[in-house]
Length: 77
Image (cartoon, rainbow, N blue to C red; front, side, top):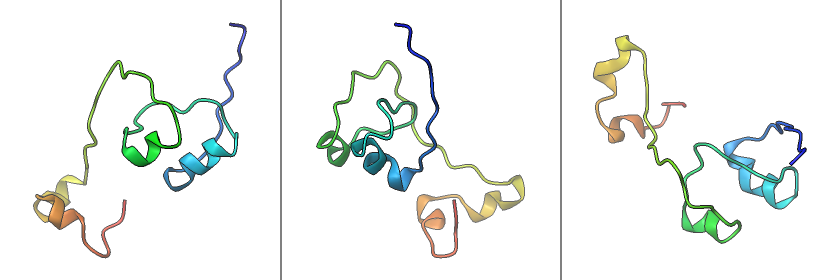
């Protein structure tokens, strides 16, 4: 193709806005397909599906055993 890779920084909150504003041509890796995003962009057939996995320090393991424990005010990601 003769194309050169240029990595364009973005963030999750700005991903679709930046895409719609033509800041980049393709976004890939770890982007979940959902209805809101499908209304704005074409998604190819995924060749790999993987989920999201929360991680924490070993010392915090007991504090975060459920999604409800994670989804609390003051817990940051």
